[in-house]
Image (tube, rainbow, N blue to C red; front, side, top):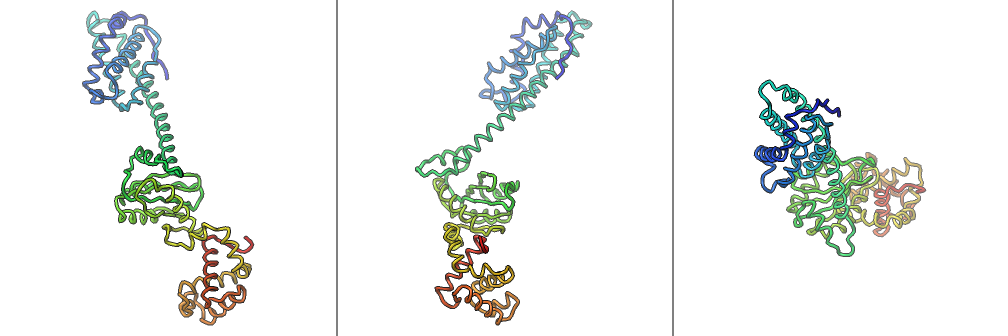
Length: 395
């Protein structure tokens, strides 16, 4: 920032400097009258406003009198007003009012309309007002940035506290929820979103879209997952919000069961994680906890599920991909069509005899027949394990 060039010692300015306290009092009154932000109980106490006026007026008048400009008071008042939430426009208006008051006082102290020392101050005065205003604005914006960062960090800590595992029965989540501005009553659900692309940001319109559906939300976005708390006034709104979420977000989405107290968040988070993982890898979809218990069970015991699947379907999985896929497809359609061979043939665009042939091949490779209830149950569980866990041969 370039400082304005200063003139030789200026008599009117020196006289005004000797009376700077009364000038500061007058400026504080004018600022209070001009801006509603300085009324009783406003962001700045009277003594703070008067002190800021005096410090800045004194340095501006000293510069008019010939001293080197000192911008420290401008920087200080910029920081102060940003911290107290005074609008930037009000900050700039105060400097304009100060410039006008200084000019009035200099004119009153002049020797007459042609006083060369007063005329000498005219241009310099507004150069100084601009310089002090610029310095104050710079400090104001720097402080705003620091405050925003601090607020973001504080919010981040609150959100992390909200989703902590409060196994000790702690009620810290209640305090975090209050601070975040979410009511403690209503219908709550936890959502876990695993994006299709790791690191993919949550779409910007999601929060407003859910708000339109009646849901307040709090989000914790991490490197490979987004965790959200949805709060609605009723179960009907909760269903509508989840449906809206499924339309707005791509990826594997898990939704917990509804619960009525924030103390249920940790358990619901576990449910939502499980539901999200119940969608097969590489696919997209929304799963509500409890809607697919077989998938939940397989995900929960994935290690045992893989061993079980290999023991049941290993012979099928080791076939060349085209043959393997034919047999897995016929099994999937058999269960989807409740064992109706004609419907299976129609779905797969093949003859009924082809369906029967493939099912016999499954029997020969696995030692299990779809017509036997126990053996069929084992085949179904293994098939679901392949679908949910993405199991292939030699994995």
